[in-house]
Length: 143
Image (tube, rainbow, N blue to C red; front, side, top):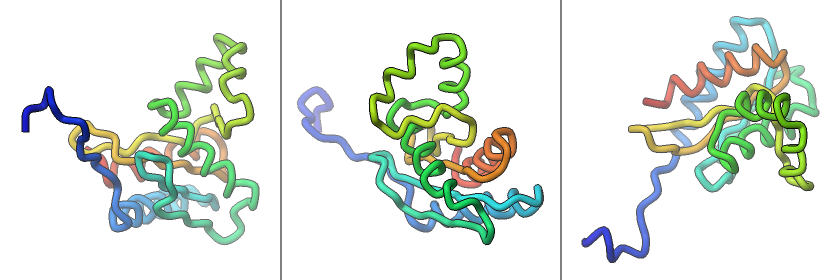
């Protein structure tokens, strides 16, 4: 197929098996830290692939983890980027405009062969711990 005439392209996406691998890595990391979190994995369209809520993880974290994953998909950056950007330019909060933008650490892209295949959001611990857990999960499935 001539790339210049293509009107569609295949999209690489995280599978349920890949999402479970990420969740397993996140659970191991969270258990090692002694924290209870929610782990939310989405595909490149922001659709849920898998979610896990550890026993005693805060109920609010279910929505927050999902919002972190959505933020990564919607804007193409880890949520850490948004956290620092909002500190530098508070007017960026207008971008949310009723959307589930979550500019706090704990959301990271999932990539394979440098192509984004999804995102993961983690919530329930400190910001630094959420980030650490999400990064461990991403390393388990990304390259």
